Image (cartoon, rainbow, N blue to C red):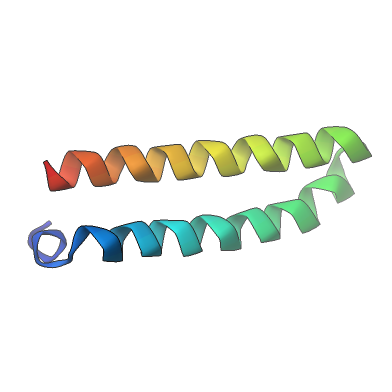
Length: 64
């Protein structure tokens, strides 16, 4: 946890953003193969929103 205090907030935001985007791209390619078309894309979007929200919440908790 000590290393997080050294990092700046914009660095944490960038890491969460890029990580979330990579997860979104992976999920949007994989999930429609297992679920019907529209449901797969909707599921990928919901997973992305959940990950980016959880990342933002975690950053807020660490930086305040």
